[in-house]
Length: 380
Image 1 (cartoon, rainbow, N blue to C red):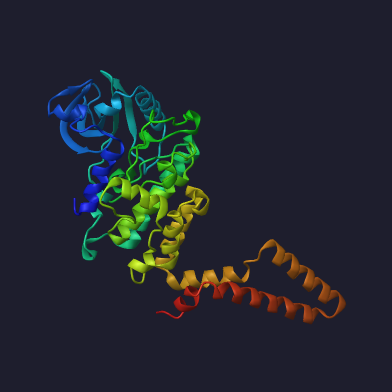
Image 2 (cartoon, rainbow, N blue to C red; image 1 turned 135 degrees about the vertical axis):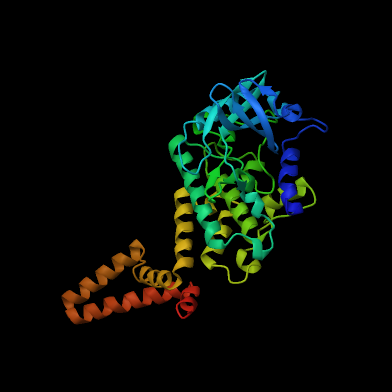
């Protein structure tokens, strides 16, 4: 772990899920060679707020897996255990190149577990807090973000799955830097619309990236917009090296997500693409209606930004052309009516001239609202 903020990502998760002081995970005593059901433990991988992950082998199938064993304080919660098992099995139906495959899920001696595809490599957490010269190039990072957004789109469209805990630790990278989204097993499905009542259902999220409506328990089951907020927080953290909000304790951090406005990328990263800064700003809006409304929109906008970075001049020229024909329905009706009237009652040439004039005025009004288009076209 490179920074205190990175450490905080795991620490506050445990605090937010209200783990009792001194409570250890069930898997804390597991060592290489130990058995957990049909799995033989090979090595320890990581520990987070909801459990510990071990490298293990299924002794009957000779398959190496990443075995996630839920922590004891969550395993004691009957409603959580039922939800975890049901939704982990649902996630096993997902088949996407950027989603960690779920092989098996169930309960052994009252402890829920999840056997997943083992991705031999690191995660995006390895790139948090690195100095600029060691950080991941922005085009490469955006390409990973686009693939992750596509994986989230697939989960949403296929099984109405949301993730619920998007963070760099859950974006695993193979040696060729292909991203694999992990922990879809902790998401909620629209089919399991279980209303949170009182403290009967704990909030499982990482406070560094948690959406305001999750804290307020106002998120709708299956709504992708809380995940989009977390995704924006993660992008902000990876691009700037700092999370959008920092605080000395979890309560203050949560309050920041609820009330404070995050700084824009343009104010922190000189020369950052304005469209990228605008996208992250929208993702971090407090009200879900002010964010991108689905993963298709988010993915497409990331793709456009990648193309803009690859071919800045071409992108700007395309944007100018788009501005020329960017009419609302009312504007288009007025244009058609004006041209038709003049062509009938006056002269076809004059009608054509007026149409061109309206196009020019429409273009100038919209273009002046986006000054980066004027600036970028003259850059080498």
